[in-house]
Length: 511
Image 1 (cartoon, helix red, strand yellow):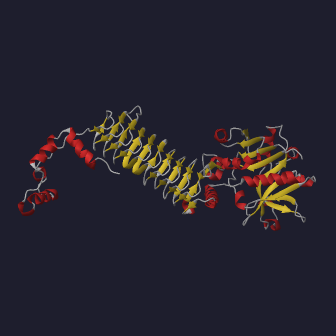
Image 2: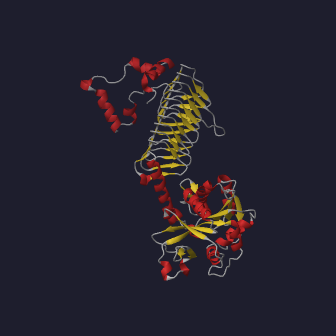
Image 3: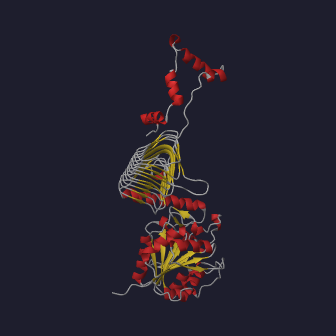
């Protein structure tokens, strides 16, 4: 059995992409979790190439920086002047004179190309001992594309561009996908003979095939199973069309794997996302980056998750999360915002209009609504009342708040960090807590209430409020209405303990 041939991948990514009308190089435009060139490099991964050469030109520094992030082993080769695809491949091989074996050439703007298609192309090429093999596709409308012209025996005769095709050739629907496999030695020899004697004044890589056929070298064609994966991108309209096609492909794969997508047309899932069987994704939902959704979890409708992990059986409803973790059986939303490093333990709850940042919410703990939790640790089974603010920023530095296990924080409370509410402690509603509350204690920080009798009648005479007050005070058959003198005295002169008693009666927080 012969040794496998070494392989080299050449990605053509030097084009300006004028029709994109963007300061961003065309190959760096994003598409469901990767850039265009990122998708192409991923398609080549199974080849386990000895080297990957990426030809850069327009926006070279930006492309190099991106390659350093996603494919640091790739070698950027600069094409100072864009003089055609043949010229690009030639300077790539000049930068790597040691290359032997199979050279695979990929366009950097074909993001729907499947890894298995690239593997099949190379297997066909190497299996037939061809000098060159082109990937072809049968398309409904070949207008503007190079045609695959075969001889009477079905062998490749030449690749003809649209402008050079005869009427008979224009009727051919088998097109050149711009993806090739070559024998390195024979490719080098022919590249040196390419001419720029054409309308564009460029070296065309497709001319290599005509020259090899003329020299009697074996050339081949591999037909892609699905023509859509050979589609390129020249403007933002085409980019949007590719995005829809990739969305449908990704969504179909997940549904066939046991994930329920209730409205696939409004569900957008990056190729980098992972979902477990029996996860449910409702309509108008975006799952992006490295997000993970566990088995039995329900996400959506109207949810965006970016680099967020949702545990098994959890629910996320009409919310936005970035870099967060939602534990198994936890509940989020509606209208919650989980910011980076928000970590919700199992069975915890973050409810309506709650924002959580860089905080841990313990197992079974609840932050039901209208609250901000920043730089905090909330213990298991703690309850945070509505409109509670974790005051974490002093204008210069961030500080941390700790709320102990089974603590109970009343509504409309400010916890001014750094501060700790001990395990089992209570905080009375409306308090501003800046000192630690010991375990099992009641923390109270609010002014005593006073009721000024008759104030509305005196200060707002004739108003609807004054009229309502007068009717209430007259009461049925003239009976007096209102607090007794004793209860008025308690309201004005009550001790902290009496205030705490009222707080403990259930008016400090909501669930």
